Image (cartoon, rainbow, N blue to C red; front, side, top):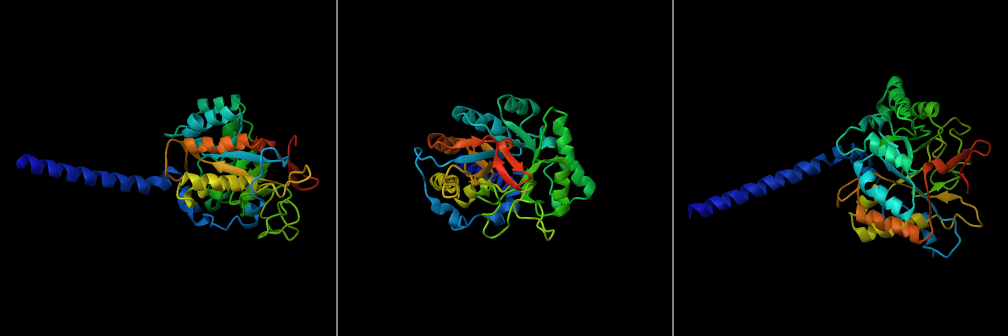
Length: 327
């Protein structure tokens, strides 16, 4: 009888300990993702947010429709080297990796040896600040450290970075931040859009006539040379409650939403899709399961999409529009 009571007490203690671990891990998720979840949760797409974009439907691989996707990965997470890169290699794809230069020694981060292996295999290495700070909260000297210091840091490791990605999608609507980015980089990327219109005209809620940084009235344009609009695909995964079938369906809709805009041999719109950490995790914010990621990349491969890096996105200063190099 005593042994039975002790066993029951031990089982109860184990259950309490397990509950504490689950609560603790859940509480730490925003920290693990560099705080991004709590700042982007309010941007989760509603079922109809993609609206007019997705009415284009799905086209077959035999159709000539200029299907292009630009892929990027933020935060130099180890899983992107261990799991994402072999999948990209499998399908012959290259992508851009935006590196937080001051976090290469963090647990779970790609180190300089990993980053060098990425570049030697044709991956594009670009800048994502020194520490992944909230740029809108910083002084000018701090902005120069985060933005310009990151470029110098990467240059010291032989990476000539010309493209910048805003942490938390913050700062691209702040003239002080944008002007600092413009001192050091040729181009920058933010988020929240499933399609980037290369002439910057197609954003219905934010009408503009071209991609100039500032409007004639001196106001920052919604999309511009320092604010190429992309989509953090993790937001879609969270919206779909990590249901793989729903996530796959949304991915197919998003990448095919360009079809109605890319006609007659001309490319007018391109999905710029960003991932964070590809690994074995499931149901974890800012972690894309590697099996699902393989399925997404297989769809692109099997359906004739051209997968490009951000280095292949150019800017024409005469027409103030973006273009795809070599297209």
